[in-house]
Image (cartoon, rainbow, N blue to C red; front, side, top):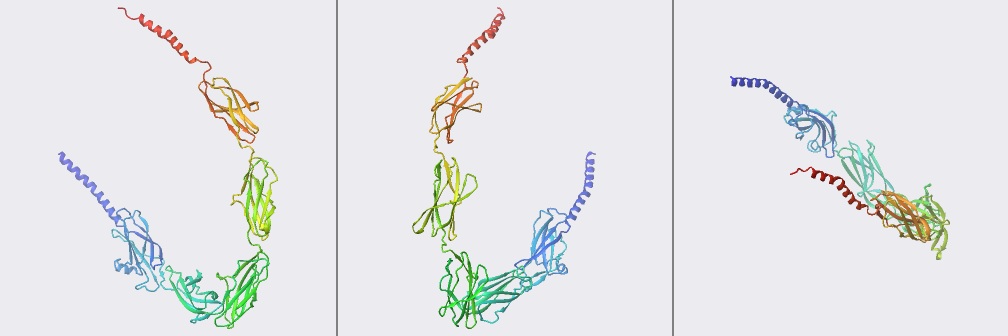
Length: 597
């Protein structure tokens, strides 16, 4: 009966659990059957003519065993075409493994779109789909932006000037081109014989005409190649270039005398040039110049010989600036404008005849004893007298002061000068003086002597730098409680003493007592030591002279002893009294109470 009852119970439990298990299984199956969702975040193209699609994928009813496996991209295919091919006509696919998140971002790249059937620039539509590992698919999602344009065409370059092969070029020649590109132009570069001379960055959208003014005089005469390179504004930055050959003609120029770095005051700048032409005579040469950024003056140069020309400028004040360029014409009307290597007019400054910076050496004592003279010397090597030789100084942390130094001595033929300055004041000991020297010669050439930026330094020190010598003459050998202690010392010192003190320390607290002078070099002091037996007392002497030189004796250390000698032996009497008064009665009582035999 009991066995039969157990079987009925088991069957009843199975019947009760079976519907629940079936329900859970169906729920899991329904969860696995849910499709992922897909959103296109961004569609871009790159320099390799590929479309990059960024998406966000969400797996509904996410669990670890259910995950997105594929992200597939379809280019220029309708939904009907994709479905008709059972999703297998994708252009590229991205494979995933298990994902830790239900929602994640991903990217997929298209194939290269510049070859095959897509040789030319074209518009492309974009469709994507996500597929799970259980083959559940998201909806086909088409990019809402419509079409993305892939520009594979190179910029179209056409020369306007020059327009004739080997065209003759001179002066400032304007190179002009027309450049067209569907994606607009991002960069235009102009070359002469592969040497980059000029570029235009980020021109206006829609701009098609581009020019460059070529100063052709800087290039050798003969055949030169003009090249233009254009880069479009597409994601691929398509680039193309086109060359055109021209012939540079016209005069050539060279300086017979090198251009000086400066010209001296009251002197003049002289330009001596050689102007030649292989095919024609030189008609005229002009100097175009400006003084101190003033108006430009066009003046004809003097023709000294067949090919030598000269122009002499007037003299100008100190620090005047002269800018100039040269114009040369031949008899055929060809001309050139000559400038420096940076294609700018030449530039030069007018200076005083003395345009050499002075050099100087400073001498002084770094330490001076009190009441010594404080002197500073500077020896200057210079072509001309100094207009300014000033000493700038400050005392301790005071303000800077400036004073003119005095010319003390002049070298033979004015080759050097010695200046000095004597401080009129005397300063107390430990004063710190800092200084530097500023020099200006008559040509306004400047020199600052400041010891490398740290400033020169003078310190005032006392005559006596030695500390007093202290000898202990009297000091107790032991110290007992409430003892009157006397300390006497002998001090050897050449300077006056500011203070002589005896110092002692008890229980970490320090005391100081001024000592009395009882002889020419003897000092004494007495004091009572308030300390108990066993405490430590430290005693020493300190002396300070008028220059704050300080001396201290060694510290003497004492352990305070009891006032009466032999007190330690009284312990025997105490033990004897203890035996008589306490222990002995106990022993006697025990003997009395002992049982009798």
